[in-house]
Length: 318
Ligand SMILES: NC(=O)c1ccc[n+]([C@@H]2O[C@H](COP(=O)([O-])OP(=O)(O)OC[C@H]3O[C@@H](n4cnc5c(N)ncnc54)[C@H](OP(=O)(O)O)[C@@H]3O)[C@@H](O)[C@H]2O)c1
Image (cartoon, rainbow, N blue to C red; front, side, top):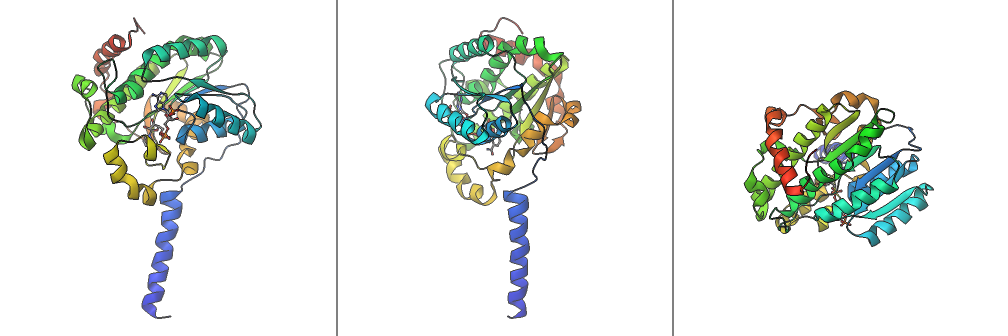
């Protein structure tokens, strides 16, 4: 073998090793912590990150409720989780986060039928164009306003138990908040194409962060976390993404999208690890805690956003 060929083979091996272990894969969160008797609600738990998380938590003994639009799909996923985990405490429920009436109905049913809520994972989300009947785009309604509504409708339940059973809330977001101010036009515009979608994503993320900070400030035994998974290859990239982004991300996602099994590991840490409690209300990218940028910690921005959120969702107060 020539020297050049040998050097090329060594470089290919090193790059391949790095790519497989640090790009496509990553660290595993090692913990044998059990969750017997704990209840977890995961919105969008029938696919992607929500599904693998639901499976893992069921294996740890938790009571797991998955909630999304497609009850038939969720019921199949529920059966799959029960079969693989051996845990029968898994429930599939229907909610359409694009519809506040559906969120209210779901919250009522959950509140009346479940004794506790120890972990709320506001995971469901998609990146699609289009408007809702509320005059707000779908993205903002699903990924912020319905999370605001659902979390507040279940807040009393969580507060009541939090002295004896501390509660954690995790909101899935992206890095995009870094480039945003929340504006009325970000909510009311029908986003078309990449730049619009990025702006709406950024504003939605920032709104979620401000909401989580507010909940955490109330200091009621509930801790909150904003989690950016980074780039994880999930079904959503094939089904729940607007057309331009699907084209743009197709090849990069195959090359650089993290495998699902590794992508959800940081969520386990946020749910299970005592070390994260001191970071309540803060921001994580993967396993890494990141300082929020100053505009996201400007808490005076919460008051107008809260008023708007009450007005849009029809809640009288929080
Ligand atoms: N994957 C990534 O690289 C990445 C990066 C940054 C942030 N995130 C965030 O992480 C979260 C999960 O992402 P993923 O990639 O795992 O997503 P996914 O595979 O596309 O799953 C989305 C889930 O949301 C549910 N859903 C969608 N619209 C809904 C609605 N109107 N009402 C109720 N449920 C709804 C879907 O179930 P139904 O279709 O049955 O409703 C599905 O279970 C999202 O919030 C996403 O923005 C992901």
